[in-house]
Length: 415
Image (cartoon, rainbow, N blue to C red; front, side, top):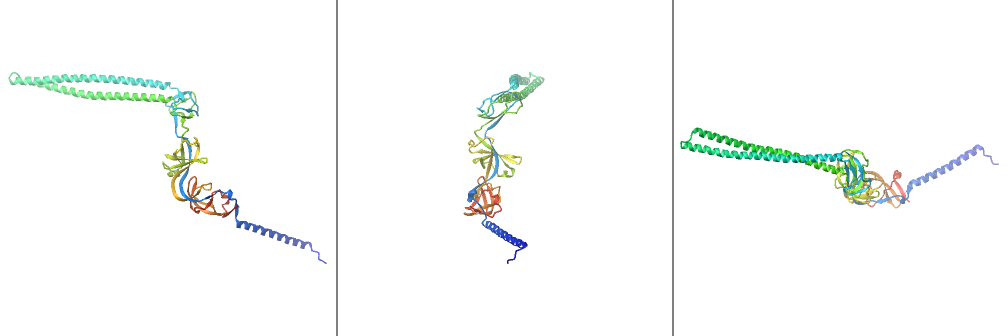
């Protein structure tokens, strides 16, 4: 008869079977994991952006930011202290050159203009009176000199006559000395009159020039006041659009305070800025590529500010086509400033993978169904391309999609 198996033996046999089944399961799992590690992780090729490296020229550029502003924009300020009494237009209105924008209270300025005009008239009258007085005085001195010259000639003849009489015994030595004294005195008086005339001419000329200068200053003040009054009649300096306007009726306005801004919204330029550390790569005339959404326009650096603001260097870009339909006043843009052009550079398209020059792990297509991770050294760049210094050869295909989730993988299979 068969021996009955005890409960304890049955339990041992059951544990052996469970351990066997578990071991088989673990072996299967380990085999599958090993196979997956051998084959590598897979990804669909259509989900990747793969581009070919090429040998070509590269325009090295540095990134900057900018703002589109009107090429022509003029702020109109009040030349005098006044107040606004009428408004003739609104912000956004298109205006013609010399079109009135505001009316200011100019009563005080007009009073000043009349006062300065009266001063100019008075100065002119003073100059005319001084000129007439000087001419009269100098003419009187000239007549005195002529009379004195006649007197000197007469006394000279008297001296000669006394000497002749003395030579025939009809004259005396005392009469000769008296005649000579009178003659010498008259000559000195004549010289004194001539010196006085010369000095008076110089003095009167200096005084006349001083009055003329005073008159010229008054005339300039009058002309300046007229210009000030004309400027105070607020008009558009050119055809354009009113982009800002002080419409506060009755508001007091100080001299130099802004009243309006008129802009030409058909032509534009770029006001750019770049970190001061890259300012050495800026130069007047350098090409600038302006990115507007997915489009680009080009221009050249026109001016570079000598001073930085908050660590940013400022520059202005004049566009090759400053009335391009893509341009909108106030729009912020990305800029690439070209500072070098080199030939025969290995380059790959730019993308989200690139964050500046340095070492990167990029995946290169080494077979139709396989990607291999490589250590690649990247250099200069622009909007479109990045320089490859080492790690990739011309003709090789590179993944430029974001592969950060595969950074630990040495290879990836393509499906």
